[in-house]
Amino acid sequence: MNRPAPCATLVVCRLAFMAACLLLARLLGADWPPAVSTFGQHFHRIAPGDETWARHDVSRDLVNWTNTGVALPPLPAGKVLGACGIEVANPAAGATNASGPWHAMLVLVDAGLPSLKLLRSADGRAYAIDPGETVLRIPGATTGNLSLVWHSPSQRWVLGTPVRDQSGDAISFHGSSNLLDWVPLGRVEGDHARGGLCEFPERRNQGTARWVLVDSRNEARIAILSDGQVLPERRRMAAMRGDGSWGFLPTPGVLPPRGRRLVVGRTGNGGPWDGGTPWEVACEEFEDGPQLVWLPAAEFESLRSKSRTLNVPRLSKAGTNQLLARLPSSCEIRLEFRASPHHRLLLRLSSEVVRFDGGRRELSLGDAKATLPPAADTERWTIVRTPSHLEMVASDGRVRLCTPIRFEESPGPVVLERPGGWWLSLQYLALHELQTTSAPAPQRQQVSIGQP
Image (cartoon, rainbow, N blue to C red; front, side, top):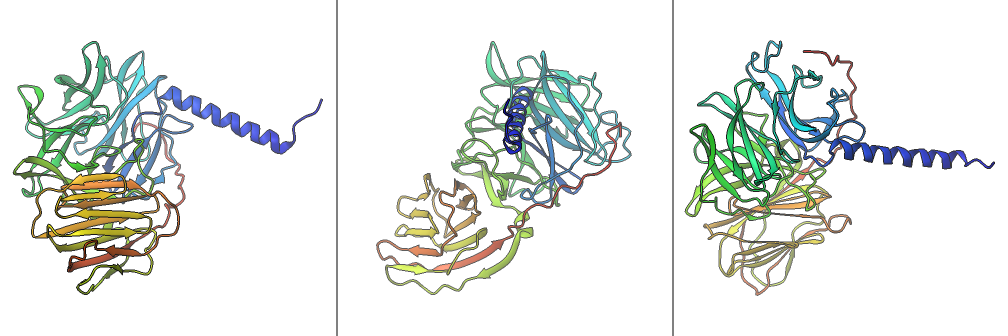
């Protein structure tokens, strides 16, 4: 009997192992979205794992992630529907023995009936769970974002869970002061599996914030907790222009002041970008109602390795002006110029093109298009290019566009074209090269998984 060659046997074994991992991931519910939270001086991301129910990575900038190397405790058999995390300042909340702040992780498991489990950690690495402890059962819960916010007046957390039952799709709310004992707070109809309840700071009023309820179509409404129920306003928030989607709900920032909300964009198929850059999202009141505003996050500062402010002379004739010999593979460009209905611009960034029509106030980035609101005195653009994608915000953060990089060739020059021959005076043009170093290798730690 002929035996396969050793190399062929190895290939067969690897294929069998990969198939087993895929089957295990499917059984564990690998379609649940990543959950990002903060604890200590790190962001913590819990995402579906290949061999276990979840992978735990940490980061300081939301870009470079490192596997903690510490296995999460196993969950009861069943499909994982979602997870969320939060830093708990009160040592007594959640019945933990930790002497200081601790990290809580809530995981929803469909083991016959969707059940909420509480994992605890004092150091953000080792977590403990009581296999028999179910803090909440949520009939009809389905895969999606679990959202968790703190309501200061009532001193309790509010949990939002997507559900699908005989009444249709909805988001169900429960409240708790200790993450162990929960009471129902009503429900809001609609598909919220890719949205949820989150809190955004008000851009003009430091220290104040608003609750915003976002559905799976990225439509948002202001929400309040009144008479023991979460109630959304009937009027929807002004629609965000452009692509305003995210891979996971915005999370509190690590650096002061507290109350910041950071987010990383997502690809069209719903997965988070590798190497995506963080943005800060706030709520601001405009004439047509409150709206979410995207701004470059302070975490960009830690990524910048080289910066140049370019003195560009007045462009006085039609044609092409090459501003840089070649772009870095990862960079941020900030551009300011006087607003005018006569401006028609093409900004070429290697194979990607930004088109702007000042008369129609139309902006396009690849296949993504948006209509800008009425112009202020100055047009301000922020463009971030990485090897995987291109992101852009305009109109003081009210417009956001993003698109994957279509061609993987080396970045070319920045070229500004002015169809129609209109004059253009660039007031400000800066190039910031971003670090492209990969995340450090995982550091395995010998930490007990016992009760903290």
